[in-house]
Length: 148
Image 1 (cartoon, one colour):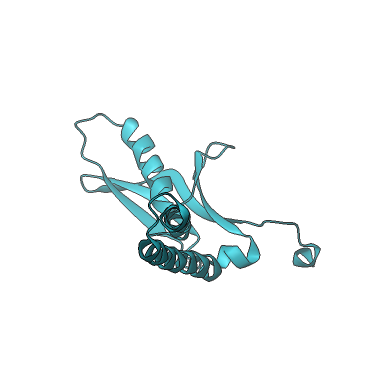
Image 2 (image 1 turned 120 degrees about the horizontal axis):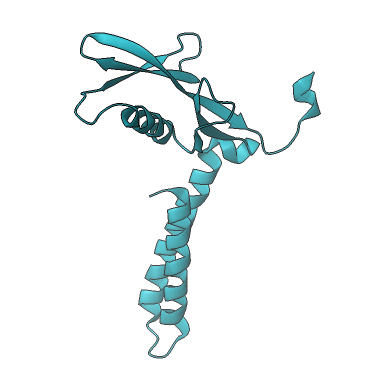
């Protein structure tokens, strides 16, 4: 489960615990067990939030899919897989359906986590496509010290 999923589960269990403890036909033992389970999920949600680097800095990494001949991004995505899938779909659309395409992502050796470029292999020929995916950090606030 993700942090937000743990949080939602804690809320759901806490509401059930309240009904079992104080509602009609109260069963305090069941209410206490549900409250304890809710506390566990709340603790896991808090731990997940504190372990996420973006939680402390407010920064978020997004993945920008681009085409070299366009001034606009193809799209922005929460994970690199989605950005790569979009680029691969666009390249697939440029070729007839009966052409077998093998996609290869070339990683920038200087910054392996930052930039990937899409090449396509058709038969024995490997061709650059002009599509790339770049990790971009979006800061939560302006920091004048960062420019210095």
